Figure 1 (cartoon, helix red, strand yellow):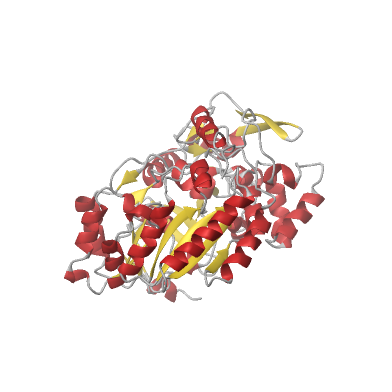
Figure 2 (cartoon, one colour):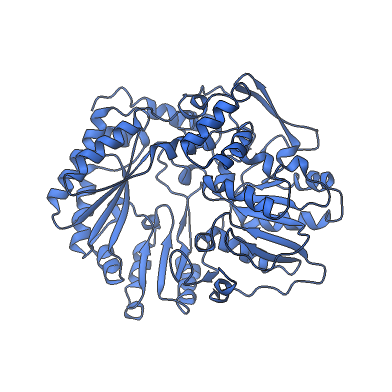
Length: 538
């Protein structure tokens, strides 16, 4: 792929002309251009950096790059997909930069990273990064660059010590992890000038992100994306998107959303409304009414995920008229008991109503998302899901029904972070496959093996970095991970410890020194509310 991909871009911001002594910077996405440029987070951070005249920023993807500086001072990565770590290591090698931060000297760039994966639990990757930005980039990025400029000419350790003083900036090298066999006993700064804990930074404004570039080369061709809400008020107890990004924030419709949409639609007719629960924006009906005007008749509209009880006939009609074929809703399970365990405030009849309204409004399909292996789940709960889907299919004939299903994976900073992956989950996916496909329901399971790999990374500590380096040469299958665990036996805990074990709430977690939005006692309270439901029969 040549630089023509960059020529196809419509920029929605004006990059600054770099000063003569601007900091040579590379901002990378560890995947192909078409994937990276579709990430709203990557787009926004790149534009934020490119609008500064004190930086000279060039982009790098696995398949294409802008002309790169010979001696970059800063190399940044946006990580939104766990297995892309392989590409981070490959790109560092491509840039002739040592993979481990302890092997880098004064002439090597500072390697920084951010994004949802690193904000949740950076520990498996900690040894590969000099600097990790924990939280929202809005204020964090500017504070990082300003602090870097102050110590730009200093030696590496001086730079790292200065950056460690910036709220939300985590310098892994300045923290030491102590172990007793499998368990972590302490995570402590190596000297008294380094903060004991790092607090995730939360942007509280009401202007959220919008695309900074539109291109036909993106995975979602020519799409202009706007973030309608950030976080989610539902607080399902397994959900990273809700707990890690609290509090729930909404974009101001009149002052920021509509002007952003109108400027984006000058260069494309494809609009994506993003957010974990877009329809829970308090002014969503007003936004819908705005988009229902004739001047938007040729706009192709897509909405990421909506809450079941907000699926009205009007919403379906507007989406159908604006070229959407289907709607996506997360139901988690057909079992009311399981929905109570996870705190999903949803009644079964609301699912039927959503399906009825979707069809009445002219949509062709409905995609439901669920999960198996949720803590407390019994086989009867899985059967309840089958029965619910069959009944919806029968109640709303002619509506194409798709059920996407993943396996529960524990995530840091959520009340379910202490649970392991259920060993029965694979069997339960196969049961669903068998029962649903005969009913004309399209079943899309996420691989159970991939869930195990996700769990290793989402609950991993620093010892995992050796495993990640080994698996890189073996390939990204669960077989490769098993092989690497075998090879490192005695040096790191067994696979079972990270994947399946239920951890004690008194245990020091790998991310103990990284403070998320809610304190541990609150998460434990939420956990107890869930476990109280376990004993309740179906």
